[in-house]
Image 1: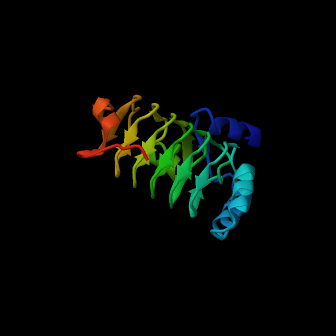
Image 2: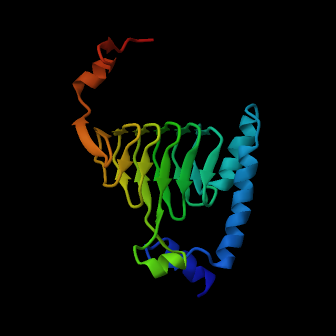
Length: 204
C-alpha cells in the first residue's frame, strides 16, 4: 500500500497497520523533536513556544505546556486554540486529529487518545489500528488523571472530573464525572457565586 493511502486511512477511521516501516521512520523523526522539547530548561519559555509552533498542526497565542509532554506524533495532528494550559504529563495519542478550543485547562496526567485496535485477535497481532478524532470545546477543564477515548466530543464550558474515563460525548455547560464519565449536573447560577462549597467569589 502506498504511504499516502496509509496516511489517508489514518484520518478516516479505516484499518491500517501502524508498524509500516515508512510510518515508523517518520514517527521517529517527530519523536526526536518531542524529546528536545522535553529537555528544555524551565527558563527557556521562548524556545518552547517556537518548538511547539513547529511540532503542532496549530497552536494559538499564550498556550503553555508543562514538560514532560507525551505524544505519538509530537503534536503533528494536534490543533490548540488560544490560552490552553496543560500541566505535567499530558499524553496525546495523536495518530489522527485532536482539536482543542480556547481557554482549556488540562490538569496533570490527562490522556487523550485517538487510536484504538480491533477486537479481532489476528488483526491486533499484526498491529492493526484505526483512529477517531477528538474534539474539546472552549473553556473546558479536564481534571487530573482523566482519560478521553477516541471519537469523543466535549462541549464548551464543561468540566471533566478527576479520574474520569470519557467513553461518550459530553454536552456543553455540565460537570461530568466517573468511570464511565456521566453528567452529574448542569453548570448553574450557584457556580457563578461560589467557587468552592460556601466560599463566595470576590472581586480581586
